[in-house]
Length: 206
Ligand code: ADP
Ligand code: MG
Image (cartoon, rainbow, N blue to C red):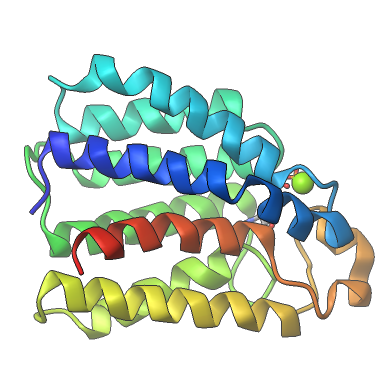
């Protein structure tokens, strides 16, 4: 179970892990993109961090909606609208809830993925963030009923495997698609950043 205070703590930790991995994410975006994914994400999550104190007395859907709108307006690039949509769709899926449990989280991730697929006109196997998100969701759905920590650990392990598999994919969406077959062998930055965000939640419930 997570309350607003716990969600805010998770968002602070997400911001921290993105700042710590800013250079790493940017390096991943160098060979297949324009070397800005870490910079984009760090800018967006810094803006999120600044908004969090004012959200302490709001409900979880309002917090997540604000995060999504902040990311859309600050991250930029392809990933800004996509991560923004993900958080806004998660907010809708959490409507009316003052606390969320692991089954709610699974439903929120599912809604986020549908949003990213629609917004990005993308599916799995195209070397994008979806190649971490979708395996994570499937693993968590498969682990439903187990303690939250175990469900999240299964999701994180699947996301990490998904990131590895992006190296065997040819990008057909986003900037990396301009490279065609030359995108082979490269780890997708967006799949990596999603996995970092999920790792924060998994760690909190381990
Ligand atoms: P940009 O590519 O505009 O510079 P970023 O570097 O911040 O934006 O983000 C790149 C990441 O966005 C990619 O690694 C990929 O995971 C994700 N991405 C790009 N296009 C799409 C899309 N159409 N659908 C899903 N994810 C995408
Ligand atoms: Mg980029």
